[in-house]
Image 1 (cartoon, helix red, strand yellow):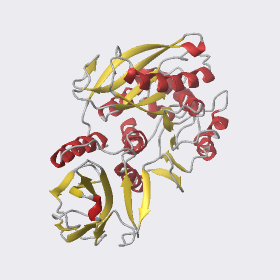
Image 2: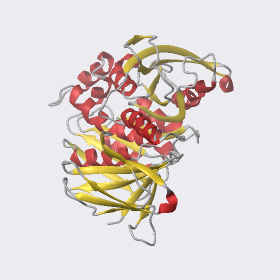
Image 3: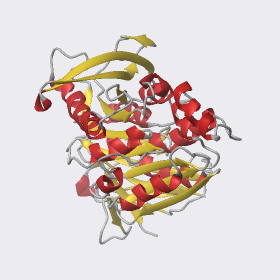
Image 4: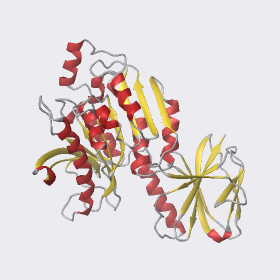
Length: 414
């Protein structure tokens, strides 16, 4: 099996070798989906869309903060955070998705929940346009010196939603908005205009969730949307026992509809559903919004380990994922090589590299972002490294030059 070269889309800034480690530690901690490195801040915003006669769009925003609370300060530093815009279900308040806003913000995302179209006669096209607009508008706050988010927002966003908001997220994602890089949703409902038809225009990586016990919007609806998506890397998860209202934390309005429909009971609770959805959603978002290559393996690992769900995944290629180049570890074609690979957890491995590449240091980290080993490199193009009793799993060895440019390869420890 060939080794895989993971190359980030942009070089790391010029740093001294020891600073390489400090810089990458910060990056890895931010992208680690198991670690919640921030507190959850909350603010309410009101925007105006000039392209639609100044339409007013209010939104609840959860963001990474240094302390918990309303209008809490951002974390110190210069880290920029990607954006997730999420549409609410029919007459369901945005507060019903606080569980999601808290989870996303604690893991380094700015989560935006528009509160528009909350009446008994919502305009789905307008709601989809609101979701798309907010993806553009909130990412643009990075460039506004008067904004709370000045210089703290990445120009990358994902869109999603629940029920009506899920269907509307397809409308938003079909708008060819260049800042939108992924779509996900929970129990998405058909809309007018049709979300199923909009899905045919969604050329984005997708993560679609359904619930087997959903009698409000049956799983077949979401499956049709999933099937229609033309992007070659997409995932469908039908959670066993999940109700429609589990995704909105059993909001009273939603639960009343379930009760009158005779489907308001389940053998699982909302917390189980939250855990299962976020276990996949966080690495999914880290992969496409933070371009964190390790999250691809973490997503695949969690997908394979997920129980209590019917699963379907297609990924013949992934042009919006990390830049992946398969490279055989042979003398004729290498940036650097690792022998042997796979390897046992307490064995010696040999690094070899082209001396002209001038690699000066390396580190080894686990798939969940923990730094395992680090050291300087000599100028001979060879170095023996003794692994320190690592447990079985996937690890990465990353090489640095004095200019800070890093390449990585995957190591399988058995």
